[in-house]
Image 1 (cartoon, helix red, strand yellow):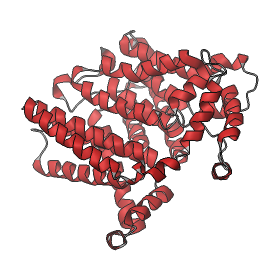
Image 2 (tube, rainbow, N blue to C red; image 1 turned 90 degrees about the vertical axis):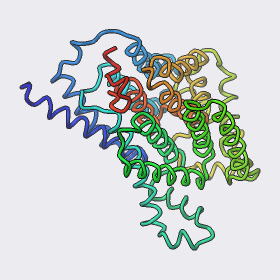
Image 3 (cartoon, rainbow, N blue to C red; image 1 turned 180 degrees about the vertical axis):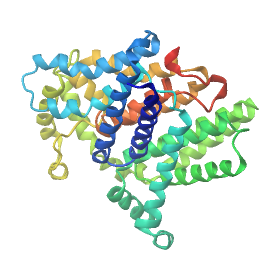
Image 4 (cartoon, helix red, strand yellow; image 1 turned 135 degrees about the vertical axis):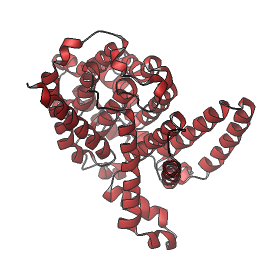
Length: 410
C-alpha cells in the first residue's frame, strides 16, 4: 500500500477507537458496530504497516499473550465438555477482550494519546448525566420532586444504561480528571481547571445518588486515595490526618447510602447466584468444567436456590451468570483459571511505567471490585477492560511528560 495513505488509516483507526470509548457507557448492542469498525480498521492498518515485522518479546507482550490465552481456554476445554449448548453464545461475548489483547501485543499507531481517551471518558460521562438530567427528567422536576433521585436512576436505566456500567465509566472519568490535573497542573489553563473541577463534582454527586453500591464505594475509595496521595506529596502528617477525616466521613456517608440499607441487602439477588456457583464449584474445584458445562450445571443449581420471584425476574435472560468473575472462572477453569485471572488483574501495575503506577493501580482496583459483582470479561465489560489494559500499558502518555513514550516499545 502507498505510504501516503498510512496517516489516513491511522486517523481512521484512532477515530474508531475514540467512538468506541465514548459508547462504552451505553448498552452493549450499541457498541457492536463500533467494535466491528474499530477492529476492521485495525486489521487494515495491521497489514498496511506490517506490524508483525517490529515485534520484540518483552514483559508487556508476554502479558497480552496470557490475556489472549485466558480467553482461548474455552476452546481448550471444548473437546472435553459433555454439551456445547452455551459455548458459541459465551465465547463470542469474550472476543472483544481477545481482540484488545492482540491490539496490545502488536501496538497502536503514534496518533494514539492518553489524553484523548481520558477526555473522551469524561465528556461521555458528563453528556450522559446532562442528557438524563435536562432532557429526560428535566431540571425543574429534579429540583422540585422529592423522589428526584429515584426518578433520575429510573431514567438512567431506561435511556442510558444500568448502574454497573454507568458508574464504572464515571469512576474511570474521576481517575482521568485526577491524572490530567495532577500530571499537568501547570500546563492546564485556568478555565479548563474549573471545568475539570466542575465535572468531578457532577460525577461524584451522581455516584452518591446512584442505587449501585459498588460504584458508590469505589468512588469514595478513589477520593480517599487521591486526597491522601496529593497531600502526602507536600505534608505527610497533614495527609494522614485528612485521610482519617475522609475515611470517617466516608463511613458515615456509606452507612446512610440507600444501597447499604438492611432492606437492600435482603433484596440482593446475587446471593442465590453465588450459592448456586459454590455448589457447582464443589463438583470440580481444581480443573473446572468448561464454559458450556459450567453454565448447564449452574442453571440446574440455581433452580434449587432461587425463589419464584427471582425466577420470574430473570425469565427473559437467555444466559444468567453467577454475577462474579472469580466464581465464574473457578466454575469454568478451576483454581488454575483463577490464578491466571488474578495474575491478569495484578500484573499491569507491576509493569506499567513509573509515572503511571498509581493510575494503573486505581484502574485495576475498579476492575477487581466490579469483578466481585459481574462477569468482567464478558459483554460490555470485556471492551472496557481490554481498552483499560491498552491505556495502561500501550498508549502514549502525553500527560505525564516525564514518562511520555509508547510503552510497547520498551
